[in-house]
Image 1 (cartoon, one colour):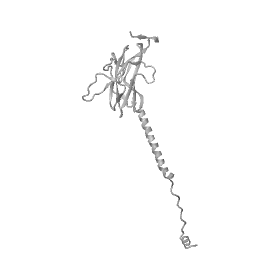
Image 2 (cartoon, rainbow, N blue to C red):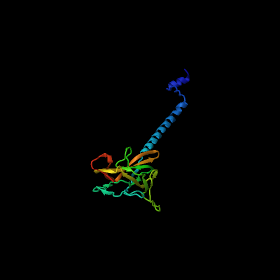
Image 3 (cartoon, one colour):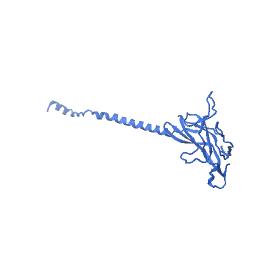
Image 4 (cartoon, one colour):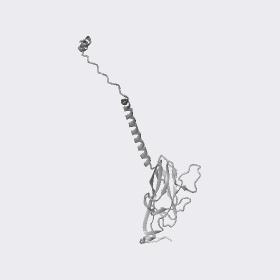
Length: 233
């Protein structure tokens, strides 16, 4: 036994612990790889949320104005308010053979611009329009004018209109009855129009309710043979 051995034994020393090998290149890269994978997952989740929000973005609403005439389109002669003992009631449209137009309004209530692709009274997915059908292209004009802006004397086609935040427009919607005959005593109604809206690359239909729904005699074809059928000359 050496002097060193005796000294270590007497002092209660212990043999040194061997030191392991240095981490290899693969071990050093593992942590950054996990961090990068997690970051990609977080970014993918953020992108997915943004896509879902964009796809469902719908800022359009009723602009506060309705009427029975629009510049350059045939007026809805004879339209009048009925059933107005509560709220706004209905707008009664008497039987008509020809074209007439109503004025409606549309406003962008959101914080981003959207594009109007189409406006119609036919419910999306509906095979045939009833009790009213479109009688031409929908026109628009500004609902409000900036100081010094020239007042429009006619409308422009609404397709492709970019509606900025808080901007509202008047719409001229040309219509006609689905048939020139109607059931005496029967009634039908139209309580909304429909707007195809585009935001970024996403397009969907939006329902805009009338403040005062349209009410009319129930249109029916002459060949229906319905009791009480009256046909316009």
